[in-house]
Image (cartoon, rainbow, N blue to C red; front, side, top):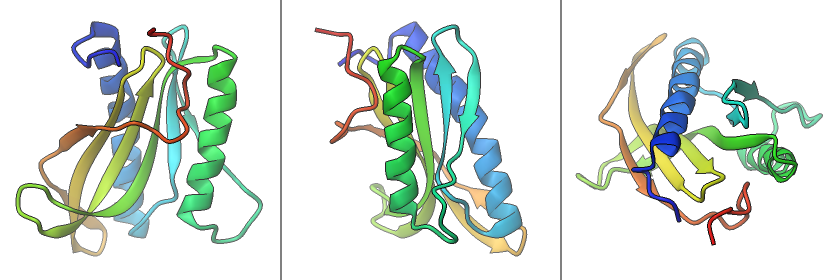
Length: 152
């Protein structure tokens, strides 16, 4: 697995977090929740959003994540992307305090082999307003990776 100290991996992670976080925050403030969505970095360095319509009214988040992951995997195997991230609204237990809270999770994968969960806890302070907590990250090994790692 490639280190997050790799300059290109770090830049792509930052670009995807900066693309997804404001949209997720806006959806939480306006609607109190959001469906999973993705953002990608093309092989040429261009950022783009990817959302899914699976043909169901009120689909489950797990169905959306599965659909988006499959779409990302198909395009990544064609060499279209060098990085991708799926953004979801989840409930977590904070590792520092064992307190349960809501969080935005950005699941980042890079074709160089880096896989990272980036968590941003949040609290709904009043209708139309959230407060973001201290972000933290952890590495993960995806069950079905978006990318077949180029690292041997």
